[in-house]
Length: 62
Length: 189
Image 1 (cartoon, helix red, strand yellow):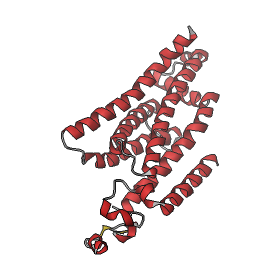
Image 2 (tube, each protein chain N blue to C red):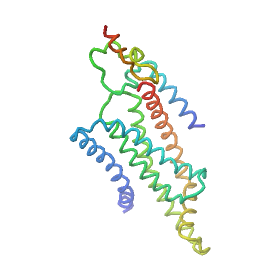
Image 3 (cartoon, rainbow over the protein chains, first blue to last red):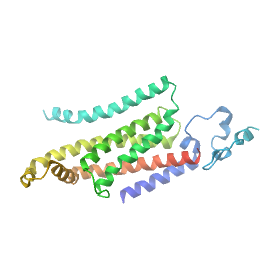
Image 4 (tube, each protein chain N blue to C red):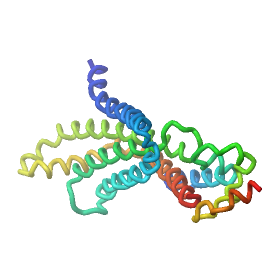
């Protein structure tokens, strides 16, 4: 029971953190200065389970 | 005298734990020196594999795996756990970029330290039990069978149960944050 509570609480905490601030929660590296304004919006460049789409980053910069 | 004995008993665990930190620094330095830092990314996969294999001991302990010496499984658990932790530490490096992977790393180091405490408690419990279970020899059991009996009995000792009440939630926290990190990496690969 204690383990289940720990698992549930930490999962909720982790997911909330990811939703509130994906950049600080999961970003594995330092983002470039050009991408500073979009650092919290992962989906501008990334597609779930498909990685970074070829031209998306360039489109954003335009 | 008692203080000296305790230090003598816990010293191997402290040395093994410190060797993990030292091995991480040396490996990381070597990777930087040889410009092979990119390998560190894949060390995460290798380390996770090692740690997953180390959990076979938990399956054996709960008798979900029927064959194999529990002592061998425990030794494998310690070696694979230490090696997996080394790979993960090098993979994590000294970069404070994201909270979730760092929490996974933090709890992994805590669980590793807790594992060493468990090993110390297990050894102490086994020694205590060994004294009171000398009669097993009278039944002409093999050394391996006696070792197996002692291991299972020592796991039931009160101290071990108290330790497990702390170790298992900590392991759960490590697993949850590691899974969140792995899933998020796979989703944003």
